[in-house]
Length: 188
Image 1 (cartoon, rainbow, N blue to C red):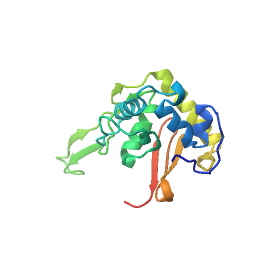
Image 2: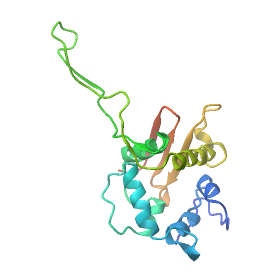
Image 3: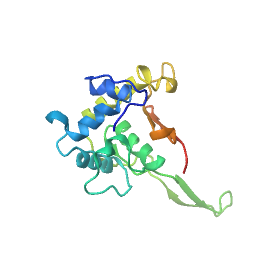
Image 4: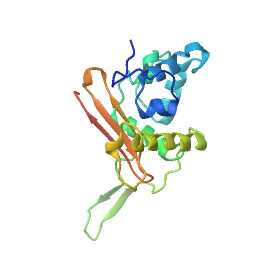
């Protein structure tokens, strides 16, 4: 049975407000296509977008509707990568852990073996206008919703909180135009 983090039943609200207040019931209805007002084949569509954005976990071909509530285990790196795709106007770029490799650093025979591209090209996986609207809504989560503690004052921040059942895990993934940060606390 789907319930909201705060226990409040809000009834019909916009998707924007549902995201701001982490209203799980609205997103469950969306995934289940309740009364024909959600996503047809919702769980599969959600998995498809997740994969395109950079989620690498092996999601099933026919995921359960609970995928919309985060029921499948996803690493913090994958989450940050997916949010980076949205922040990057819908263009997915593989995360880069190593920016430069040098042999014999500081010596006369120093040699640069590898330099990561400064602006990797990536692949457009979400339409730009959808990514912009998503960012706008997630900025609202930080300015109007339950993620207010992530505010950086005048600096725009987009993000989303997440809490697992029984509060074993807590997330915040957020971004500014230049940086994506993912935080997770819980039991590995």
